[in-house]
Amino acid sequence: DATDRLAGDAMDAMIGKVRELVAGAASLDDVRAGLLQLAPTMPVADLAAVMRQAMVIAELSGRSEIAGEATRSGPAGDG
Figure 1 (cartoon, one colour):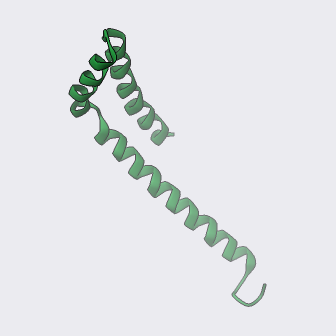
Figure 2: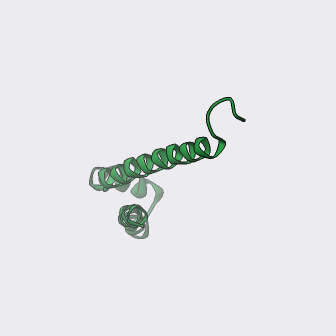
C-alpha cells in the first residue's frame, strides 16, 4: 500500500547513502565521521511522516476491531 511504498522509499534513500559511505571509507573512523556529516541530510522527516501515518492506521484498525467485537457480542450484560 501507499504507506509501505513511502516507508520503503525513505529507508532505501537512507540505506543507499550509508552504503556509499561505507564503501568509500578507509577506516571505521571514516565511517563514523561520515555518518556524523550525513545525518543532517538523511530523510528522517519523510520516515517520521510515514511512521505517523502507520500509527494512525493501526489505531483506527484497532478501534474498528473493538467496535466489531462489541457489535457481535451484543449489549453489555448479554454475554
